Structures are given as C-alpha cells and as structure tokens.
Amino acid sequence: TTRIAERVRRIKPSPSTSAADRANELRRQGKSIVNLVVGEPDFDTPLHIRQAAAAAMDKGATRYTLMAGTVELREAIVAKLKRENGLDYAMNEIIATSGAKSAIYNAFAITLEPGDEVIVPAPYWVSYPDMVLACDGQPVTVACPEANGFKLTPAQLEAAITPRTRWLLINSPSNPTGAAYTAAEYRALADVLLRHSQVMVMTDDIYEHIRFDGQKTPHILGAAPELRDRALVVNGVSKTYAMTGWRIGYVAGPADMIRAMDTLLSQSTGNCCSISQAAAAAAMNGDQSFVAESVAVYKQRRDRTLDLINAIPGLRCATPPGAFYLYVSCEGLIGKTTPAGKLLAEDGDVVMYLLESEGVAMVAGTAYGLSPYFRLSIATSIDILEEGCARISRAVAELR
Ligand code: PLP
Image 1 (cartoon, rainbow, N blue to C red):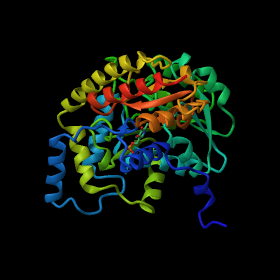
Image 2 (tube, rainbow, N blue to C red; image 1 turned 180 degrees about the horizontal axis):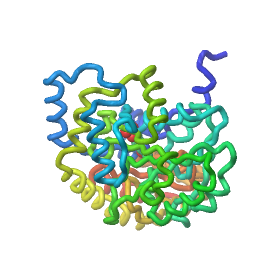
Image 3 (cartoon, protein in one colour; image 1 turned 45 degrees about the vertical axis):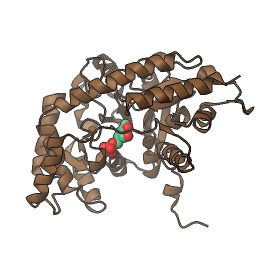
Image 4 (tube, rainbow, N blue to C red; image 1 turned 180 degrees about the vertical axis):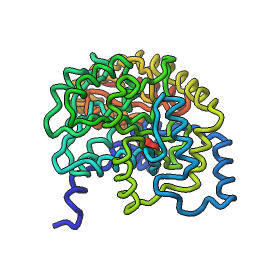
C-alpha cells in the first residue's frame, strides 16, 4: 500500500534533476565533475533589475498582490507582447505565475479531462509529458527526427489528432534541440489545426530571445491570427533575463481560460512573489542590452563547442538556431565497448560512461523522447566547455 496518490505515482522526477543530483554525489565523493546538465543562464540578473526589486521591497511591495499579478507587471506584459510579438492582449487576458513551469502545469490543470490527449513533439522538454499525466491527460508524443530539423510536419500533426486531442504544445526555439519554426511552417501547422476545432495550441516561448541566426522568433499567432481564441501563450523572464530563481512566468489567452487559472491558483499557490513581480516588470520595461550581450556570449560558446564536438569521431551535432543546448547524436558510439567491457547499447549507457569515466555530466536523449542523443548545456563558461569536450574526447578514444 502507498499513501501517495496515483496521479503522482504515475509521474517521475525530472531527469535533469536526477543527473545533476548524481553529478553532485560524485563530486562529494571527491571526483572532479564537469557539469553540462544545467538548464539556466550562468549570468547574474542584470543590476537594474535587482535594484528595482530592492526598491520595491523598500517601498513596501511585500504583501499579497492581485492573484493575476500587479497592474504594473501585467501592463509590462501587455506592452511586451505588443512590442516584441505583435500580439494584442488586454489586462484580463494575462496572468502571472510562479515561472513558466507553473503556467504550463496550471493551463493543463484547467483544461484536461481524464484521457484528454496532448500532442507533444519529441524531442521535448522533459516536464511536458509528466505535467500532462499529473493532470490526468494522455501525452501523445510524436517523434520529430533530425532529418526534419527536429520539427513537427503538418502531416504528422494531422495523423496525431484524434477526437480526444485538446492541445498541441509548441516550444520554439526548443529545449533540447534549439530547433525553431519559421512563420511559413507555423502557417502550415495552423492550417491543420483550423480543420480540427477541438484542438487548442499552447506555445512555450521561453527561449524566444536566445537566437543565433539573426532571425526574430515568429509566433504562430502572427502566422495564423485566427487561432487566437484557442491559444495560450506561455512565456517568462527566467531565460531571457537570467532570472530563473525569481520565478516569474505568465500566460496570455482568452479571458475564460485566464479566469479559470486565476480561480485555481487563488486556491492553491496564490499570487507569485510580489518582489519578483516588480523585478520582472523592470526587466521587460527597462534597458534590453543584456539580452543581446548574453546571446552573443552563448553564440561564441555554441560555435566553439560545436567545433570541438564535431571533431570527436562518433559524435555529430548540427548547428542549433537557438536556445542554449547542443543535442548531440551519439549514434556512432552505439555498439562500442568500454575499457571495462561494457557494451554501449543506448544513449543512457553513453551518458553513464562519460560520467563515470571522465566526470562529464549530461542528460541522455531518452529523457527527451528521441535517441540516440545526449543534451549538452552551453550555459557555462568556455573554459568548462573546453574541459568537458577534452574529457569526452578522451573517453571516446578509449572505446573499442
Ligand atoms: N519551458 C522550457 C522549454 C524550459 O526549458 C524551462 C526551463 O528549463 C521552462 C519552461 C521553465 O521556465 P521557468 O523557470 O519560467 O519555470
């Protein structure tokens, strides 16, 4: 018997967290670890944002706020969506949440009936399927191979839709591949969605500004404004402004869904942190130069790491247009044997070998629903990335 509810027993802890925990454990045992697991910017939150938080605290912004978020924060979000995405939302169509993670979870919680299906293109962010399961839904993962740029095709979407489909979940640029949809690709996906009125679309835009190809990230609602009444736009300040610990995300969408989220959140977590809300408003309203500066640094790291990885026999990685990860194919290592005589049968074996032999911590492709790959985070210094690649190269050279 167990006292834990079935809806929790059917989900698992985040594999990124498990990998980080294992790396920390090895570090405690005295092993030198190069951690390439991290999914957060290694920069400090810009000074003017921290100062805005301090000022808000001093001015007494230490109490409950409106559930949906302060007027100041929602005005900043409305202005941001207009300025950066060309999207028009009213104040009652916005709700602030404790991170984009909570936004997505609660969006599922207010819309899924038991057995409702959510189409999740793979590779996907590890949390999506478990969030759906925790809300009694059924994740329908669709493998999007590298040959298609790790992107969902209209034909795949059409084939995945059933009468039970409630959501298509889109994350562009994507964690873990960095793949990004073009406006034309969005239009083609939207044409499929428009044939199936039961399907809504949720966009996780958290990496929209982490772009290396000079392209502005388009929005599916820009390509297909007709979808507005069945779309939820999820975003937040975590990645763009190096604010992962502040826990501010938000959702924009039709007022009935926002109202339902307001009700559910008001009976669960309550409003998100008042001080963080002031900081997030300052981030969106203030000087944006940190964004371009940090993206330039990520780009240098990406280019350097790509060169090093692609020089290792058996590994291969295409150039990602965005986000701060490399999704490296390790197909060339599958079937090889370690010095200890262990066969590398799948990407999980490769990742375990690289961790145990050289102390390089990464996450296996199985966690993201497409193998054989591993995800390497470039949200760390060039020195650490070079050291990590040197160790990977050494470990790979030992394989037979
Ligand atoms: N969405 C994706 C695709 C992510 O990779 C992450 C963080 O790793 C999040 C959402 C969570 O963002 P937040 O910190 O705002 O909860």
